[in-house]
Image 1 (spheres, rainbow, N blue to C red):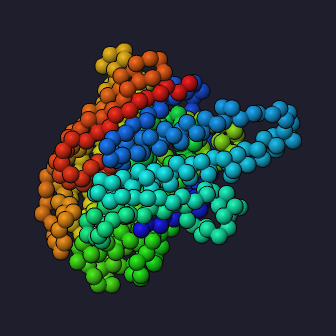
Image 2: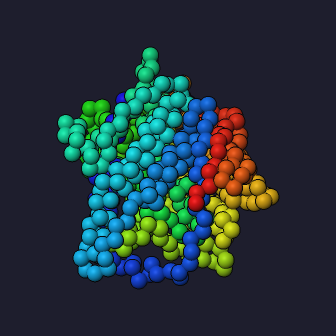
Image 3: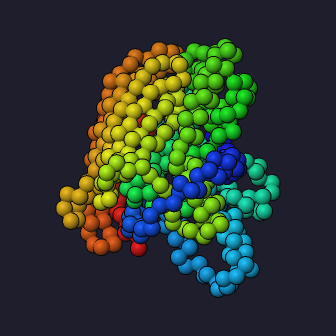
Length: 438
């Protein structure tokens, strides 16, 4: 059973800390006035096991659709004077507290639980069930008996004990799904030349700062009873898999994981999310803003750090994204293990938005790696063999009408762990519909 700490309170602390840096940023945030491009279509997809990427893309679209409430929310005329400006500011503050933050929390925790813990559980043959609690401000208002830090719960229905690699894959699945979600948000921003809706920014901030206090806490190096905290549980399971039972082994692991996590926070999108939420949406009332991105000629250029907890240790990743004004994007990335347990690496590329015909848009991905084998059904193997593996996939979207399209992904991979993909070898993918947003 995994008890997931709320994303809300941690994000607030991160928002307050990042505001110091953003005070220096406002002059640089001025970008040339330009109309935003059409909104990227909503995508609702499925596969037999409702895997990680499948769940992430569907929850992402559900969240974007829910934030369309703004289009039907009445805008009363309160005048243009000082009183009118004050009333509009108060209204936006109430909207942030009672609508936007709870909605973003629902999206983030849905991805974390159903698309993360749940997807990995389904893949490994376990039957997950969920409990969700009132989000945001509604939890202390209407459910005072609920622990304030609880937002969701995943339980595994199985006849046996979940242990070894199966346990660590499940416990890290929630954070894994969040990082997959953050990648898709970044890809949408880059393809739109920096244009982004404030709802995406709020979800991004909640996702990237999930468990931040646990990662940075000195208590991570102290082992206690079985913890409902995903990060503490992960460190304990990593000790089991690496035969690092001593207290000093845990301290060393926790120190490396804590230091590596700082990489996750050195994220331009995360910093801009603070500015977009408070500086632009709350104070200026801008629902859509343009994040300043570097340019190389006609190409938008962006560097994005990622951090992940794999079955064999924490890993650092760096994405280099390039996109043109037609929405064609190329992402090249590299990943390395940084926990000190074993050495491994991976690299790959992904492309999106390649127009094959007026109605057909294609994309693809290629991943290669050399990393420890994931031994799901073996115990006591503390130094698994290194394996070279790869994954290749094709994305496709066929526009049926102006509003409706058929979208999907088909790929094949060798055995091995890759963020968001099945662990076993074979075919993988999903199929569904895309709906244009106007």
